[in-house]
Image (cartoon, rainbow, N blue to C red):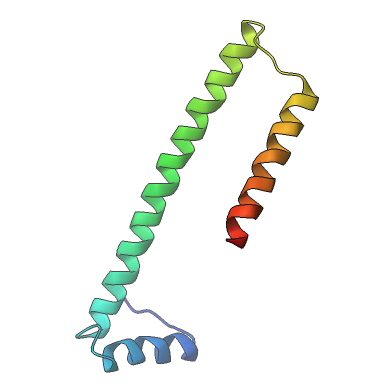
Length: 89
């Protein structure tokens, strides 16, 4: 399968081989493809998880277990504030 790469990517691949991290160009490509495969698997898992979470929310709404908008916004703002504080540490 012929592949045409921009010069900067060719240079990057050659630098990876020259550094000794990979024995060949083929190994660099395989490592990249494995990373792509893993990322896709993670995205699919996260997508399935989000679907489950949405269904939980839909079921709760159907039972009348709803939250006030102000409560949700306040909770989200607090989570955001906590993440900012953690990021500063």
